[in-house]
Image 1 (tube, rainbow, N blue to C red):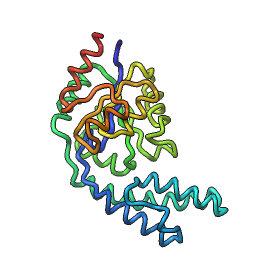
Image 2 (cartoon, rainbow, N blue to C red):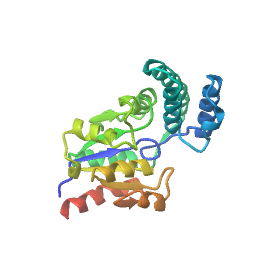
Image 3 (cartoon, one colour):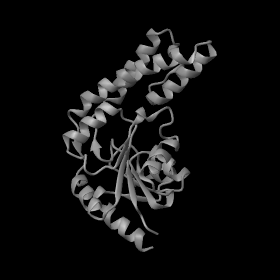
Length: 226
């Protein structure tokens, strides 16, 4: 086995992103309620992307066209982006990230980011921490409608990196990262630095669990020997 590329999640994996998700969800629900959507179809326990799916179904069932759906979706994501950009200004790197990225780059590995965060906040973070030289490909949620847990998001990254699924590794802190990787038969390394527990990552299909980001170079070296 030869690993040629490492594909990272951002929030909770590379950086500690201080976004108040509850506040964002509450504001999105309030916005949609003000747009005459029934409050009862949304829940504070679901992600904004799950809300957007419900919003789209409701609009289609009520005869709304694609243009109007996209307009409402764009307004919601613009609201989310403003929260993300504010949070990005107080974000910090996860301990050990910089030296690990340098070590992986030195090994000649291609690296990429695939994230549910928007383009503006991601660009801000990359520039703030001078990470531009590390990542060959960055695909945010602005990539299109098919974002993780849809494996098309990861498939697009693999395509741009020009690597086969068996030549890549996904590193992430969420079950959605693990699900994408598992579906495409990409090795999935779960890191317990973010939102999901060890048990949740394992159930979602993690091939390996890393307690620290700094374990990655050694783990990849071991995989290349197997």
